[in-house]
Amino acid sequence: MVLPSVEALANGLTATLIIVTGYLIAIRLLIAIRQSGSKLLPAQALFAFCLGSFYLGSVISFWVMSFTGYNLQPDWLGNLPPYSFVGILDFTVSPIGVCAAMYIGFSMIKPKIVKPMVTIYAITAIPFWANLWFNWLGPSQNIPAVGAGNLVDIGLLGLSGIFTAVYILSLILIAGGGFIYLAKISTGEIKRRSTFYAIGIMLFSLAGITETQVHLVEMGLSILLVVIRLVMVGAYIILYKAMIPPKQSFPPVHD
Image (tube, rainbow, N blue to C red):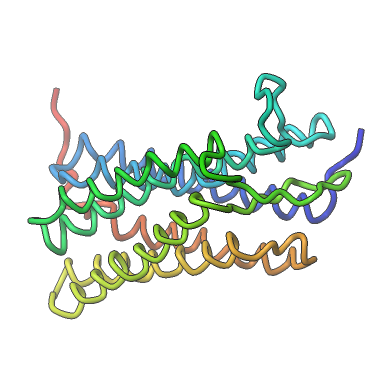
């Protein structure tokens, strides 16, 4: 059996760290729902779950390869390109995550337009998933040749790539910019949380752009990939500080 290369270990372990961080934050927020009256907590928990799930395919493929020597490629996928299921697992949650982010952001910044904005982004999920899953209107993934012991490196093409760029830019310009504005005009707890939101979203988005647009592993830049993944973990923790209700809003729960 071929063991994972150093690059695959760096890729897989940092991806595992990200997914564990995202899921732990989501679980903590779900627990807080019962203890707090915040109506945003379900959307915040969903957002945190999506943040972790962006690496679901990569993490599963890494651990499958660690025990079998091969990347994830189920036999039942039929005529789909080799290893494309990894990309499907990684990116299927993208529209859901951006919808959750827009719901959170506009609920705090401009509540009157929450529903139309979330609806617009939800509609984009239809062509996004059609392209990602079924290569509608052209191939959705760029998958370089995978050497022995290496983890598959997925890049998005076509509609999937376009919508992913739109999602990330929306996070930067609309969500991140909106929270910067809210932080400027607010004081106290709202200012603090808006600042955390803005910093976390910006760090996550910039790291996401770098990783999705540049094949760092293919270019031999695994060290830079590790740095970017650690920045992303830091962004998740900052976003957690923005989303978790203050302790004083956790009264004892009586049955």
